[in-house]
Each structure stands twice: as C-alpha cells, then as structure tokens.
Length: 234
Ligand SMILES: C[S@@+](CC[C@H](N)C(=O)[O-])C[C@H]1O[C@@H](n2cnc3c(N)ncnc32)[C@H](O)[C@@H]1O
Image (cartoon, rainbow, N blue to C red; front, side, top):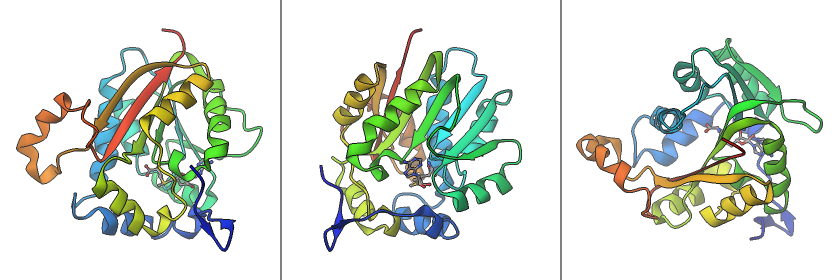
C-alpha cells in the first residue's frame, strides 16, 4: 500500500506538533467508544502482562509517545527497567516528566538498546511508511533478549468504526493501516516466530458485564484493534 500524499509529496505527521493536544485529540476521536481514553492503555498492558510466563526484567515501549502506557507497564512489571523511545522529542519530554522512574531515548540510527524481555508497540506501525517497516522490525528483533517477545497492537483495517476514527483523526493523516498478515510477514522477515494473534477491543467498557466474553472472540476480525506477538527461542 502507498503512503498518503498531498500535491505528490508523502504526508508525514510530526508528533512534536501534537504532543500538547494528544490526549484531547485521542479523547475526541474515540469518545463514542469510550469516555476515558486511559482505558486503551490499561486494556493493552493487561492483555500482554497476563500472557507473560517468564521473568520480565527489561521492557521497551517503542514509539511510546507521551508515555500513556508507561505507568501501566510500571505497575505490571514493578521490578523491571522500563525504557520508552520515540522519534518525537516533544512527546518524550512529556513522558519523562510524568514517569520519572522510566528512561526515555529519542529513536535514531545507531541507538544501542539490547536484551529486552518484552518489546511493546502500540499504534505505531501504521505511521511508519510501508517501505521502512521491515527495517524497523529487524531493529526491534536485534533488541530482543533470547526467549523475549515483541507484542504489537495495530488498528484493525476490517473494522468500519476503526477506519472512520482513523479518517477523522488529525494525527492519523499519514496512517496506512496494516492487516495482521502484513505484521506476520514482517515478523517472519525478521526471523521471529509467531506466538499469538488475536483481535481485541470489541465491547465498549460501558457494557462491562459483556467484557468477559472478549477472551472468546480473538478469532473474529471485528475488534477495534488486533494484537500479534512473536519472539525468538523459548
Ligand atoms: C498514535 S501515537 C501512539 C503513542 C503510544 N504508543 C500510545 O499508545 O499512546 C504514534 C507514535 O509513534 C511515533 N512514531 C512514528 N514513527 C515512528 C518511528 N519510525 N519510530 C518510533 N516512533 C515512531 C510517533 O512519534 C508517535 O508518538
């Protein structure tokens, strides 16, 4: 798939321009589904933390933005070193102010980060131009400890509400959504073994009595997002 263009030039969103308004824009674009957009951070970190069966000493959130997931990662893995990276220095400034017990680094060529037991990536790959995605996945694979996992959440392109939200959200102007099959191919291209794939975020939290059903629905391609996990070794 090609990246969106304006006057022949590819659109690229600079999240430095959105860091101050990020919370409000996210809330405005998702309020039909959920009143409190913190829900997304809690929900995703709950899912990945419940799936870990080994000791987690080092966690990387790649593309952590303003750090909305970091406090939940800290709570889920209280003894781990937590590192957040992003290409947006302004977003990281906010993340660092809110999370003094985590370490933040601007993503750049040659950044040396290694041996993470868990690499968490949420809503980042659709902002990376398709041609660059395999290179990014290889870098993430190099940062993984033996037996560790990379857990990636992405918007579900099969869900019409998700597509509507993306089409109306200003910071998604450069979004090129990926199907799960593309993410699986990127994992394979980085010599990683697929461990899990599940659709998620089906039921709005106001229907909380139905939420326990979600764990039986991972196969159904109608969730707002999906989650793919892969790793190397046991
Ligand atoms: C929609 S935000 C998601 C932020 C965070 N993961 C969350 O769940 O709140 C996408 C983030 O990806 C970052 N990003 C885009 N391209 C990136 C790249 N190539 N490497 C690292 N981060 C990138 C943006 O700067 C932005 O902070």
